Image (cartoon, rainbow, N blue to C red; front, top):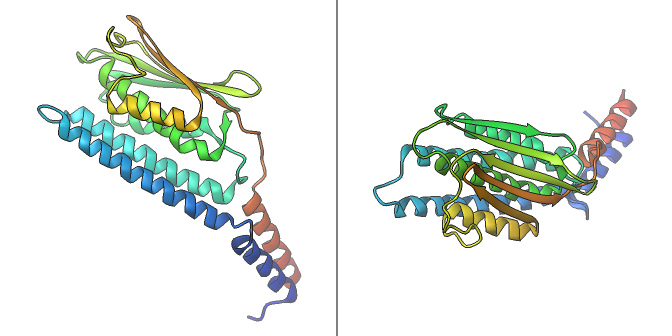
Length: 250
């Protein structure tokens, strides 16, 4: 079917979005390539960790490791879609991603540990921060499940995300276990989970910390909030152009 002048013009504008200085598709592809490379490194670290466990990895450790990998894959998928359909570069809802992390990890629990969440609205962060924050959440929850109640007794892990000022939000992960060992320092601990959390928080340049007592352990971090927005740049541009072309051709 022969295109009208308006349709050809609309297609040219769409092509310019794809191929010009605002090439959102290429930027999204570039990011997902970096994210997949990070995922590959993460899987390699987990594989190495299992090889160093004396007596072999337990069923729970393996289950949580696979659940953790699944949460990162899911976050990459969601983030890639968001980059193409939502406002580019302005941010994404961290609470939404944390909710999916909790759901994935909860599915592998036997019932002894209760994983609950208190996730508020207004927790937008920059889109490039979503994946490392998702991985931090996964690592800390996994450590809490594995180490806070090692005797098989029941326990609770609470994940909370909320705005605390106009510019910052706070993420908390709290368990009611026995607390960290007295001679253990989270700033120097050699466990893979703690090393990853330290590396990722340093990469993001954010404040974080662990607080521990006989009543349990609390992890917290503070991160700057991204501006609220409701407009999709790439999606609205392409939909608007397509609508104009269809209107002209009808």
